[in-house]
Length: 427
Image (cartoon, rainbow, N blue to C red; front, side, top):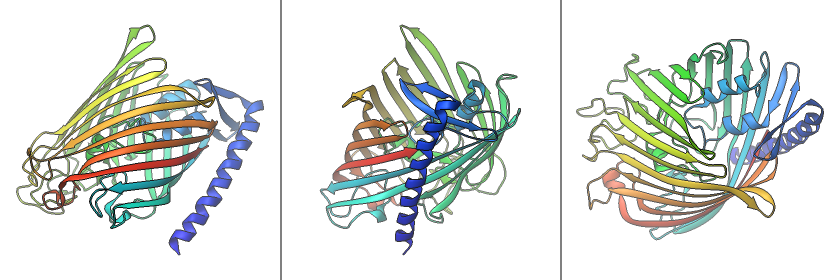
């Protein structure tokens, strides 16, 4: 019953978004259109209310600007993409069709799916509404407020299908000063974790993406080339990797992240980043994700370095993240490495992005069943309309190591192949 209700809601939302997007394009002809990558990006401003497709595409994209959405919003204010004293609305529907096969019944190491979503056999094909997301950004001369609610069909234990995923308030105006102060629920500003694949994330994101349930405090510095953020995090079990030894509610967990961009000439740019997170889930002998209690629990942080080389039509990226100490559950440090590239060209006359992403996660000693996992993705995204993108992935996975009881469930012999086709509609 619940599935049919959400399918109906998804269909209705698709129709509403499509109508809104088309209406926005028509209104934009008299209200102003921004240009991005040679493609029109419709925006509509009607006094207090507004939409901005270019802004929505970035704020709603889980593959890019994963950890620095506040910086995106503040720079959008500065560039005029966000109007002051306005409410800017955005939304997205993402749906995919997935075909997957494995050499071991019931074991599918695809990172973007939870184990219960798979069949007990060796192959399966199914379609899903991955998420329906709506957000609003409110601005005043010194304040930027952001709220995002979403339906997701992949929820972690204790979560609901409909969630208030992000809600934060930032004080700052980059035209007046390069500093800001923000409070709220958001992705922690740690690491880069960008994925060039259309739909699937990398091992770095899978192992180390930090999201809070409790409000955090973020203090940041943003200049034309440099980003720095310090996040003060409450000692509670958050979503994904956030945790601390006692989870006593005090504010002694923290993260710091920095990035600097430099011009290399001839249209080339290099971005270097680094970060540190004090408290992660990799702090317990109990091989459970996350552990509620544990033996010899102590702080086990993580550090990250990343680099991106960009040209007019291409990006090349590398990222490495690792815990500062061994995970007691596997007696080994947890690490992840991503190497990826993308090229912006055309497909059948439409703007397209071709990508190759390879990532590797390691959490066990050499020769153990839970030693590592590897993922390689070939991807293609095509903009068939200003607010509609079609995507395709071919994915190869080697190794099966769930982060729940890895020394029991790990299986180094598992290999799988997946094809994912999907559509994304944004306004």
